[in-house]
Image 1 (cartoon, rainbow, N blue to C red):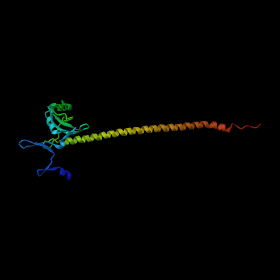
Image 2: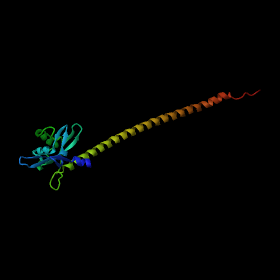
Image 3: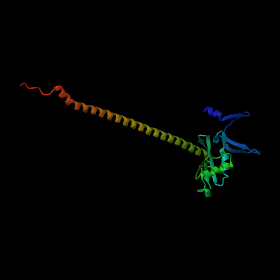
Image 4: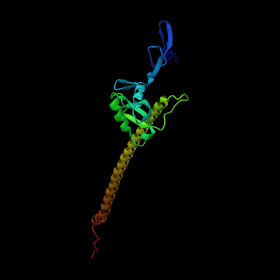
Length: 212
């Protein structure tokens, strides 16, 4: 797209540069170090959280062997920090997600500490050994979409059940009303039939008199 292409470049000192989206720093000797990606930034209640920083802190946890931090939707904070953690062999079966959350709150700022922790046997990696964080992020988003679809489906099913119950109640009410009306007509007809012989007797006036 032409607009996206133009936005990907900028000029500085008469030269045109491409925005790679990488974050980095340069040391005193002029060496550059790539530290993170702009797209990975997590906006938690207005605070900027850089996943690589949280990952480096998590590596200090005695139970953590590897970790990858991604953003997750949060109804209150907008986004929250989620950590996918590979535990060390000696910590497996002994460490809970809450243990990692509690450790994080003690060793980093509250807004940086993961609020969600899931364990994995291994992290997905590229051929060069780089953790494929995008894959984890996409899986998370896909799961969120599935959760939304599932929730919508359950709501729709509940609505359909309520509608069916209303229809059954209306049919039952109509059926009872129809039966009552039919019974009333039958009762009225029965009363007419019972009254008919008496009416005929009254109208006839009895047997004629015989002259002597």
